[in-house]
Image (cartoon, rainbow, N blue to C red; front, side, top):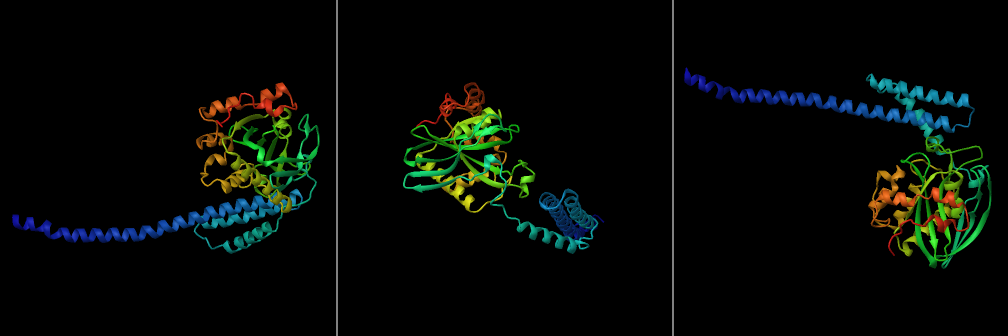
Length: 365
């Protein structure tokens, strides 16, 4: 009996193992298709939800109808999308899908027909697009802005033609103007010459009279893009003195050749905008992403970073890349580079550019 008992486990083990192995195989075969089906349905549902939200908002923001009709069309598209999504959730993915796909295709086709206007009733501060001409080392800019700002609504407009000797280009400075908390700022890049001249550049929303900037609306082809080249007393001064924004100045560590290449990128982009307008986009074509695209054309290694989108933290990014003054933390550079109080105390004088740079750390030559 003992021998039989000893043989029994040895004889049954292969049979038990085989049955268990087959059971696991059957379970895997049954679970895998179900898992994949749920995954694909979830992916389809998320895609439908995104397409529904995007299409409804695009229609609401851009249809050339009055408010009620525009809202009605956008709501109808949203209703169709949500109904299709509900069908997917209930496992009836094909029901209504064809209708929604046709509606979405029509919206995408219509979206592609929207082109940025070359002429409009532009707001006075963005009424002109700067252009540039280069002959040897001589850069001539037409429609340089040099407004006198008393308040954001009270100003004296002035557009000028200015010339610069590129062989005398020495510095690049970064201004960050904080208007909506620490996460978001407006970025201005200024180029300095040996004679003390500064030319500041800003990528901005080209608003029409009565219009404004909206991070959400400007995702949907609401405004066009404009490059402004201006005197610092205008472009920076309006933010320090007329608006009272928290403006911070950072001196950039770069060589004259790289500075020249970046300035020429600005000129080329301005000329292209003058010839072919482009839409402003809060995520893809804004004051930071446009400049970063320029930089990537002249500098090989420019890492992607989340701080390019949350551009209020761009100084930390620049500090990590070693392009700010060495020997200081970012917080120290922010503190020493905060120029609003200084600018308000001094006023917008002829030596504004020199005054705001006093005490701001500069990279070693």
